Image (cartoon, rainbow, N blue to C red; front, side):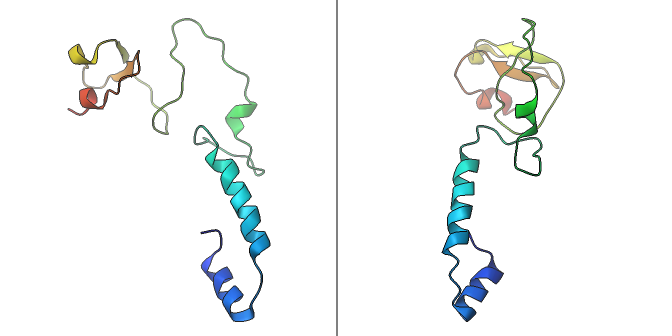
Length: 108
């Protein structure tokens, strides 16, 4: 998993020791899986560009948080307080105010 096919072929043919490369790649992999979100853009050194931006001040009307899927979207949104009685119109986005999953409400 941490070597390319050409590297494996070279290791088999020439008996090269690639443990150092594997150790480095395992370390990098471990660091990457600790990320909480998938970065929108990375600098050449691996820095997540969004971590360099100042935090936005809340205006009391804007919802903020971590999305369940990557990407960005804009549109009319409705906060759903009770999924059992959710009424979502075509083209609207849904944000549940609690912990319940809304997949059943959005599946239609």
